[in-house]
Image (cartoon, rainbow, N blue to C red; front, side, top):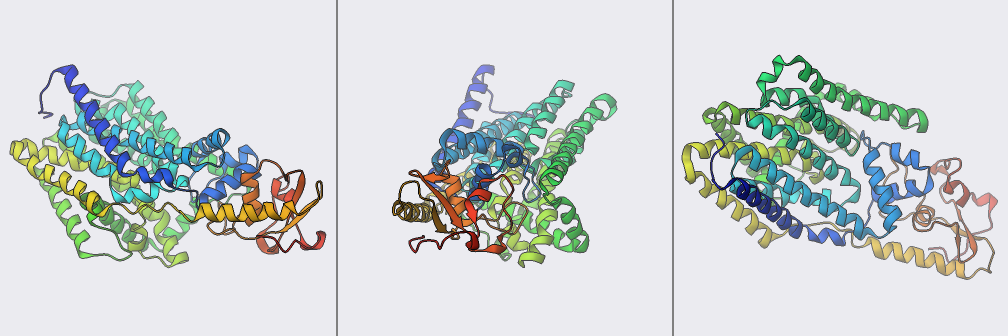
Length: 511
């Protein structure tokens, strides 16, 4: 039964919109500090690739098993519009997070009919501290945008199903298109697409008898994976990108237990951080509190499944399936390889905040559906603990706050190195080529699909300058690390980076 909080037809939609906007606004206020964040690690790597290679290579380059065509397109468009100013990048990140919170609130309301539940559930996810690393690192924008696409897909089919309607072929096709776009932002969509047919059958059991519609749903799921395989193959063939998914399968077959342990740890951290908010912080080791929260949540879900009508039960199971599918893919992709290459335990992998953003959105919908089922039996009494939970989450934010790593030392480091470079160039005569000793830049991440770093100061110059000159003086960088690999033919690096044997001694004023 979808109950509850009666209001005039149009009034209910206005009230729901206000609740969604309120939850989104509050979440953006909590995370407003990311507007002062700076580029870091992979951000510099992608900016370097954008300015050093062709646009086609930049768009098609995968990383960590993700195909990132859409995210890279947004990256390139933002760079073309605003250049090296990080503020518009993170304003886009914050606005997309606010959109996701509003979409989540609307989805919960349409599934349960309860405005209070929609507001508190969406707020719990929107202010969850585990989102901090995702939102404060622009390279992870793809996950935020992918989550928006998945939520839009769910808006297209889930509420109709919970109203007892069979989503039309048009609905399922549009949802499939959103899933496909999501897969071009981040790999989260692969997990969702994998279980999408089962999710749809859970929500609408009667759809099984409609072979045409089932074929469309299965086809949409297969299309997402087919597009992913095509993009991975193109990147491998055209730009020699390694087939990371094949390596992940190899690692999984060698140590399946590590993937299983990582999966359980991810679920533990995801549930605990969602329920406890800023009052709890995950550590690289398991702790008793989070296990107790997971056991309590499991007990609550089980009890709700017992008392819930079949429609609510299917909603709970369907969204729980989506969350567990995302965590399972993460466990397979990161568990074995992290343990082998970096010595990380499953608990340490699970404590990485950016691994929880999308999965927790699905968890909170399932949790709200469970509360809705219990509230149907207990009437208004169920909302006393719900309101207490919401107040506790807000109080924890006020008292403890959220630790957002904004990489505040990087602007000064970048400014220092560029100022030293310009000072050295200014000593040369106009038109004279200046040879600068290349230097590593702290804070640069690895190049995609490799263990190499961008070429230090030369890479920073490529990012920040569209010309190969400074004030009419050509600049060249003398390679200090001959083992860093050959520059790509035709790239700016191939022009700017020279060997010590072919250049005069770099000036002593090099940064």
